[in-house]
Length: 206
Image (tube, rainbow, N blue to C red; front, side, top):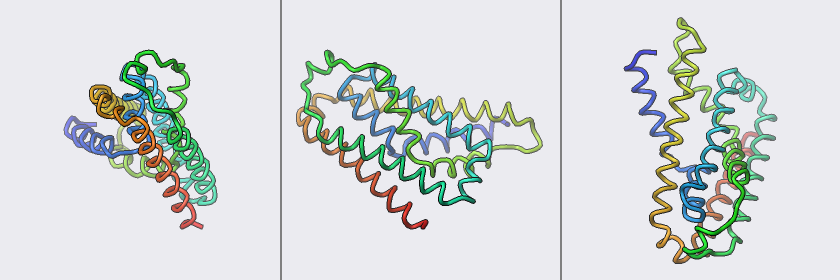
């Protein structure tokens, strides 16, 4: 991969990372509730999930899902149910004060797990990665080096964007948590909306 092509890929990946989605919403919510340092566990979970998706897409499962819509629908419903569970959990979560954000106890593995499964919640990402990443693969060059460059670059960009969101939420948490119950309900409602959209999209495939 030439430097010019990598620059185009990096800009495209940055644009993709900046599009709001379940993981950026988690980074925002967790950044305000737990602080950006703890939210790094959430982000790492999401990065791990994206690594799985990219690897699977590059190995050709995206094409298989395209040919087997019933498999796609099943995965999509599972993902939607997980997002709905996150939405309900957050919607009914009690508000916390600024002082509590430094004292709240939550296991790193719980944050990691939420980020990981949020990344895996939308199987359509597989199809997107299959189409998107293929544009930057040169079939005449060795596959593994290109795969490593693309994967590491994308994950680093995604990590930087989500960490920026978490840091921003941590800095303005006074504003966000001033109406903590409303903030939780808004984030929870967005998760529920994403889940509903995923289910409706799945039904249109039937």
